[in-house]
Length: 160
Image (cartoon, one colour):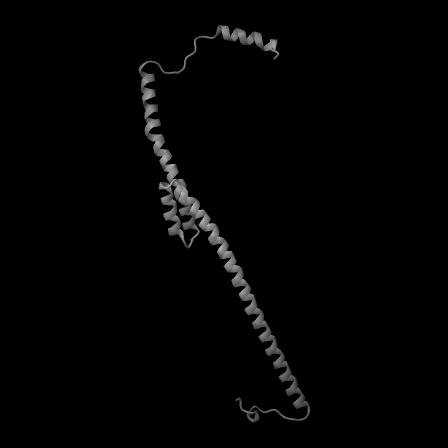
């Protein structure tokens, strides 16, 4: 490795002229006080923050289910709270169950949509048949009127 001589000389001069290094800006009692405060923060405050964040991560799915008005939000809440004590095993079960339920809903939706299309096609065929019959009846009435007959609602035969 080559050393850049233009930087070596100023760096050497700076290193030789520098004073003693200090690890802290505090000395004596002030250093002890700062160390005590930092140790209390690390031992008391950080675990509390960690527990709070851990709790928030575990109830986040419950909040999302509540916002989206999920039909099984109570089951989601129970599983995710229990997953706190089971090491996350139930969380995986809940995700699997949700995926299975989503697939079942899609399959049911597809089957229901197919049945709906069949009913719609059947109704469309019935409506088309009725329209054809009405057009045929109109043509018969027009033919009778053209042949010289008269149409009177009172002389029409009664419906059976």
